[in-house]
Amino acid sequence: MSKLYIIPTPIGNLEDITLRALRLLKDVDLVLAEDTRTSKKLFSHYDIQTPLASFHMHNEHKVLAKYIDRIKSGETFALISDAGTPAISDPGFLLVRECVKNEIEVDCLPGATAFVPALVNSGLPNEKFVFEGFLPVKKGRQTRLKLLVDESRTMVFYESPHRVIKTISQFAEYFGEERKASVSREISKMFEETIRGTISELLVHFGTKKPKGEFVIIVEGKK
Image (tube, rainbow, N blue to C red):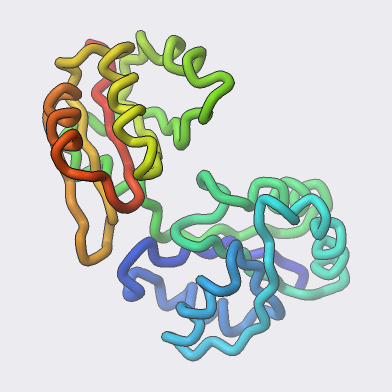
């Protein structure tokens, strides 16, 4: 049956995957992976023998039509990213959109996503929030921050370790040093950590402790 499954994979602990996800990864005809080397570790752990093929931001435009044709011909595919839910700050949107255009059924499984535990762990209001993902690295970064100055909902950002101090410094500039925030890193991994406080307190913390790992930053909305 022609179908695309979007399957979340663990963001740290390999046990953070559903039984349904494991069954489907073994049953589909092909698994499209962001980095097959990373995915092979998961496949080896759970003895998954399904063929893997690369599908990432550098080749998705080139291989999209080929895979759409294969699914339309009757094959069933799964899409996974290195960690978490595909298409959330990861490749996947183009494939889903093309499947929808071609009336191919898409089924996204519930599962691991880094920002949900970070948001809940922050202690900040979470009944309403806005997911910003990664801010633009250069062009458009200041424009985006200016637009968020008056945002009243809790804001969720992803950030890499080598830019996290710069980003928090810019939050201090645009949102104010006393705005409450929370930084979670290495979620579901051995060195998982959540630091809470004002933006100025977070700057002091990371000024003395080198940032390591992948970060989710939660910032209180404007009151």
